[in-house]
Image (cartoon, rainbow, N blue to C red; front, side, top):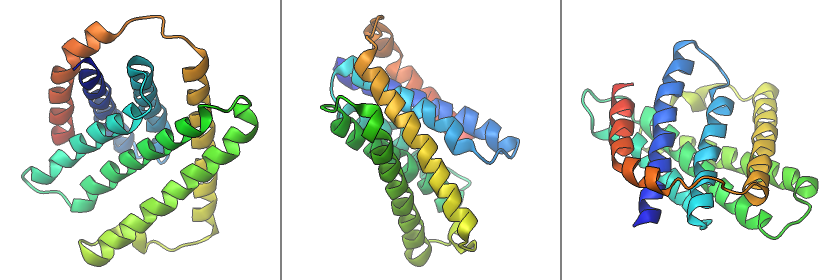
Length: 208
């Protein structure tokens, strides 16, 4: 039960950060919101791993944060489906990439030497998978304006440097989980605040 509450807490906190910071960044038309929000998602996933001692907590936390996003599908007035599904899928893909890299990094001593290229490839692959999801949605479910923008060298360059930066962040997070001990016991707080945070996260995602 403690592990479940831990996962709910960190997933809900991620949802709160996505709702509040994401709303502020969109309000000021900031273009690099992914790189600002990504470290917070990493923090939530890695803290869950530290607390539970289970690598699978990464995907579970991402799953909670993604499901909080999907609540908007049932709200009125309805918003375009891609406004809801795209962020949810992106969050879950981040969780899968982080989980996969954590498994890879678990038994690697020289993490910095080969970890960054591996993380770069994994993040870049997730971007292509996400674009595939957008194309599928556009073709079979609902119009998605993102896939109708022209493909040019600038777009692929943007994907490349974004993958590099996120890959470096991912390696750094994995290194901190491995080397920095958890000096404070969060169990009491995550247990008490899991459900309230989940409620706040849902409300904020609906309102913002």
